[in-house]
Image 1 (tube, rainbow, N blue to C red):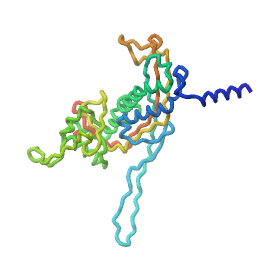
Image 2: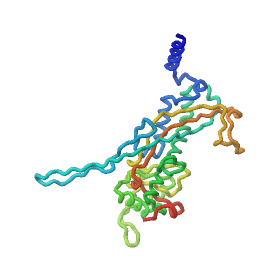
Image 3: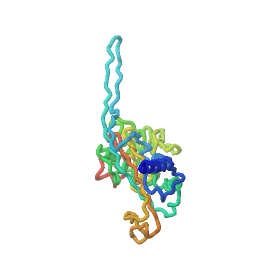
Image 4: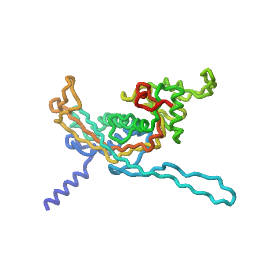
Length: 324
């Protein structure tokens, strides 16, 4: 009887859990409250370059197999009374595996007196920024990448690197690499520092002396588009000025199988964060707390040759592909 009573009280406490009224000091671990967790994910997705461009794949567990259309059906001319031929679409199976991404944010211990809702409203931008920057650098540039592929690695494997500056010639070489592989470019990944070079890209009839008759500028400054497709700027110190990715992002997938989780510590020593003397931060000594937030995210490139890249000579000359 006592056990049943205790269980009833525990269930009542669970049913009454309200992040607007529960203090952080009373809930130091668990899932980020649903409303705040949703806002964190929205902030990650809306700011991540890769998540803006790639196709979202629903995931409910750590691994997922799914089919994608590799080649569509064809149509045929039919004479009067002839049998209409049939063609079969080519479906391929892919397997995407989610990896765990974590961030630790040290904050003042006064936050222990905040409600869960108020606390996550304060730290949400910090958590989201750390997640989307790390995800983009891994999946686009291949920096500290846990996945089997990144955009950089896929392009290198396909030998789709154009070495040199961003010019008319290199831009059309990039486009040709993707088009000749059977794909249309639907987006570009660039840097704001590249915009002056992008504004110089024009299309038109080239004369023998190198001048272009009736040039049409392909970069639209107001819409940040290039040749009609969106340009998304990646703000990362890991990406150099002069790098330009282009491709068909219908052949990239990402998924987020679980809710975000968190844990609060008051006594940890943060080996990855140091003070002004280069010493690890000790939370107890400094009256700080730290939140560790984690999320699981999957990623994969379905078609390596659906992408190409312009890369400055000093980056692409030796390890990258040859300039067409």
